[in-house]
Image (cartoon, rainbow, N blue to C red):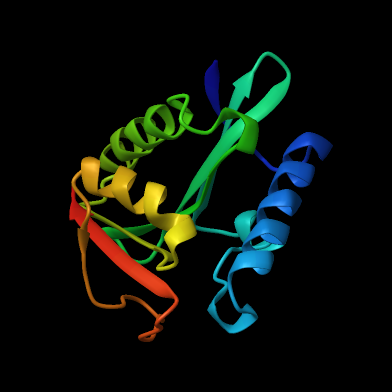
Length: 151
């Protein structure tokens, strides 16, 4: 497996992200869905990585710049057939190292508060993220959990 910076121009990653957004919409009320669409992920201040196993996308994640020292983790996903195989941990370790290299000193995230998202929250806790108040433009939401960590 390899982790690559992705310009989001290929059909495989577009399909992978479309599946992600469809899944989030099926679980989370629309007003609580904060996943970025493809155009937003291509925007300035966003770095996107794909995890590739040969020619197959098996995971992805992004960092969105909030200010000069604070970034947000976005679009973390492992292929459903590959969950609990270490892809998310490998990618999160990579993203933490890259955000430090980029000069950020804090990384925050929003994830779901529903039981479906418990494995993700446990992963983030394992990597040193702690629960926090809403950040950036987020507002309190019973469907969201907010987490942050210093880098």
